[in-house]
Length: 518
Length: 72
View 1: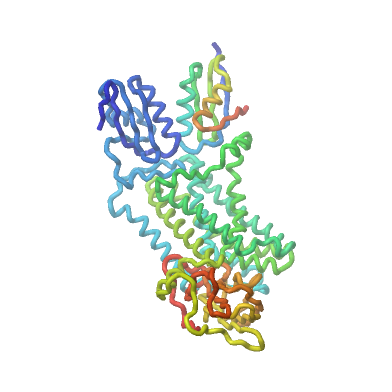
View 2 (view 1 turned 135 degrees about the vertical axis):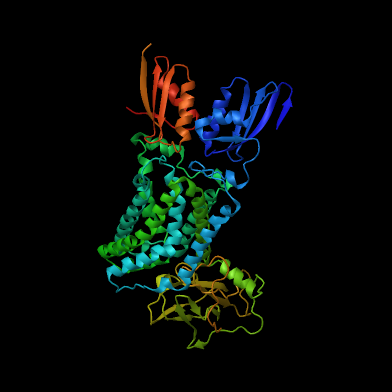
């Protein structure tokens, strides 16, 4: 459609095959070479081209198609169908196989299957198959790592690898061999094993002050997950996410550019090492034991073997994604599936880390709605159901297992010393410790034994207690004498369903709580 | 007039369009005989006549959003 304005004509075209800012400039420059083109304006996010030509004639899309023959752009006067111009950033050329209706939903199907598989893996308690404690021998840590590599680490670090595979891929031309393209993934894993070993040694040597507090690492994971959500959106082809270009700022590239592209090569190595600070439940457990070992060598061996154990799982994800992205026709579908997985994993991570921070997460909100408990100040109606008072101490007794705590809701008086007795009826992976804002440090659990923690709650309110990763949680309501939890109580009605370490806490409350007698 | 060749390193090339854009831009400059950019090793080799200065070429490349430095 062209509108004739006096002696010039404005024509609008739609373009497919645009993949980055340079494409806009190429098209605009080439068009300006045609003498009777007055101006050309390409928009990457909208995938459109506006051309103003002298006189009242205008060029047909076909004319442009031959003019830009070998550049891989196709022009048309009608939009190319909504989904098709999903611009995949990081410049892998958008393969334009014709998308039949069913084909479009295929990625969602595949992603759904993956997530179901992952969820079942968690619920069947695979994650509690192997558990490690201070006395377990080194090879067990390797097995522990293997398990982590396919469960919660796959969610957290695997998601990161998936989202980074796009960026790393774009640094190679299409015809590079598979080996060169998988270089970043190999470097990433080498960085992990070396980094974990080194930092494990530091843990063994220097001990606790080096390790991040649970709430700090929770915030770190949330921050990274948010970045992953953006990358996931990009992979699905959501145009709005294009603005977020995940590239080092120009100043950095200029500084290192003289060692011709040195900076690009080793970035994955450092990123691998830095994942030490992105712990999933398993990693934290291994870190705790490396710390407890008190010897740098032992610490290094524990963490190094653990990281080695996670390599197969993570490498599979990395190489798989490189292979799928490499060949044209699967790359579009794959990046949608990968994008969905990255989104699901990041939501899953954010949700469980919220619980570690003691905030109410999706699980609580949903179970809150479930019990028609209006979110707001939980004032107990009628007589509070306090825990027994023995010898001047309030006694909290509960069983902890890989799938949850029972009972998992308690009410105690503020200001009265409290003794928490936790019997471990089979925790593993990341459920072998309890952390909470109510007390310092954590309660370490060993299967079959009772662990005791004493503290005095000095402020009324609703507190959560969870495993390392916040998958499994419970609530302690500290009531003042009026039997209420005070003004700024968190609106959490307990009922937080235990959902197994690494269990999907995200969508919907996962798994009804076993008989919770409270 | 004899032509000279000069090689630039352009590290932040990231996809196939980048070399194309750099070649088009440089070949528009009067006095540039040929420009051939490669994504693989992230360099641009330009052959040009006396009156074209390296600074002119660098600023042209930087105009398209890339950073360039002369490498031997």
